[in-house]
Structure formats: C-alpha cells, structure tokens
Image (tube, rainbow, N blue to C red; front, side):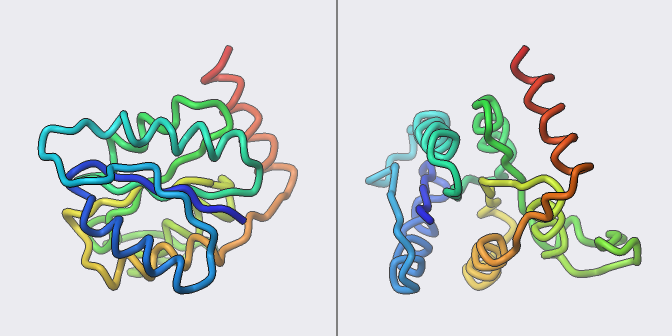
Length: 166
C-alpha cells in the first residue's frame, strides 16, 4: 500500500515528522509538498495532488495536515473516489457514540467509524488541536482499521459518488 502525504505551512512541521515515522515503519510514502515552510502557501495546491493520487491508486491512503483539517477535507472530497474524513481528537469526542451504539469518550472512535463504514481513504488532520503522539496514533489506527464491505456500506458509498459527480 502506498501513502500520499501533504500539508500547507500550518501542518508542515508535523508532516515532516509523520513522513519520517511512516518511512521508519516500512511504509511507502510519497510526499507531495509543501517542501519548504512558506507562510503564504495555499493548502489546495498540496491537497489536490494527494486526492488525485489516492483516487487513481486503488488501495492507497492519504494524509493531509492543516490547521483545522476542514478546508483540506473539502478540497480532497471534490475528487471522485476520495472519501476524506477529518480528525480533531478530544475536542469533539465528548458524548460520542461508538460503533456498537454505546456512549464513548474515545477521541479515536471517529477514525474507526470513517474506515469501517465509509472506507475513508484520506485522513485530514487538524494540527491545531492535536499533539504529535495523538497524530501518530491516529495515522496508525487509520492504516490498521479495515473497511467492512457490507452491502449497506457499499450502497452508501456509491450514492456519495453519484451525488457529488453527476
């Protein structure tokens, strides 16, 4: 499996660290920028190549790092075949419901749900709300969680593609 990774200036530092972490753990990583810290850069310039690469390379994953992760996910999700989920961590976990319908305080539950139910193939990570250890944990969990290719999930994913790309 190949991993495509990018960030703007806000996520630059953590992207460099996560790239090194992924390479150290024997993953094939393609860094798609930014390649230098430039406070005036724009995230779509780096997110779009990741989204296009993931969409055309079945079975690959992408990680995009930005301040909130929201704009990055919006940009990535414009590409047919991309299902980018946003991860904030503890800031949104209060009152969460886990995959079995039980109350959960696990901030990583959203990653499992995004992979298991939605076959998310890109994770947009908020670098303003997470520390390096939580980001590493999120990245590893995203890679380790398998999609449950049940018909109901497949049907919903097909509908997402139809809605966004008519």
